[in-house]
Image 1 (tube, one colour):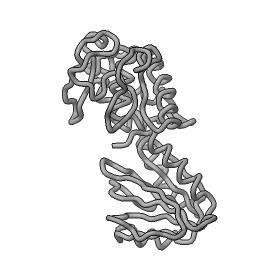
Image 2 (tube, rainbow, N blue to C red):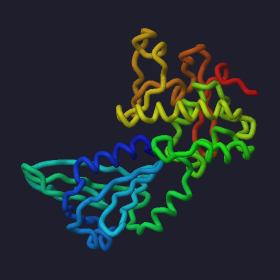
Image 3 (cartoon, rainbow, N blue to C red):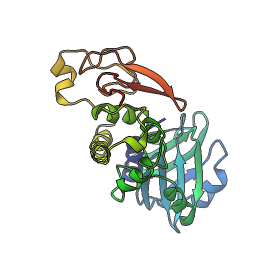
Image 4 (cartoon, rainbow, N blue to C red):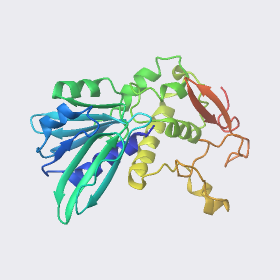
Length: 275
């Protein structure tokens, strides 16, 4: 599932390609056809992202709300004319641009629906703070964390606690601060949480800028260590994510994996000792 930096990049991509332009909206698959017809011909007013939720705003405070889930994806294109849709396209956005047309096709999302302002506000209300949003309040996440006996590794993945953090950022920020992911939230020190939040802000902003997740410090890059770059579909240089049984980049202890709330957990038992 895409993590929050990807959704913020998508918000920017839509704004840059379609902001202020009259759009042709369609649903070749048919499942969003009625809502697409209501917005057809309208300009894109603005875009917004909160955690893993994308919002495309149209006049009259109407919003297309998209959650990609596990299988959703957008594809973008430009050409002298619109191509025929390929596959199950839930939503197509298209605009006239110099030289022809620009388009974005959405396939396989968990959610694609038209909301009014009150419904959009309700989505925001149920989400925790997003490290990539200017209005984020890390204290709101802390209130939930320090009152819970759940493992911190589980709490960081709960979107009503912290929005936008997924399995990669979860594993990596815990490693960077030497926190055992099985530690109960109510045993995490406030100063550690504050430092983790600040780190997530920096890491996720870099994710937005680069389009990939890099979490290793300068002394642990492939160039600094004389090692081969990581080869993985997710890209980026990481400490523990998907590095099961490989030596820790810091202490060479084999990285461990276990399942936690249905997701694979990765950590170094030496750098992240149990308390």
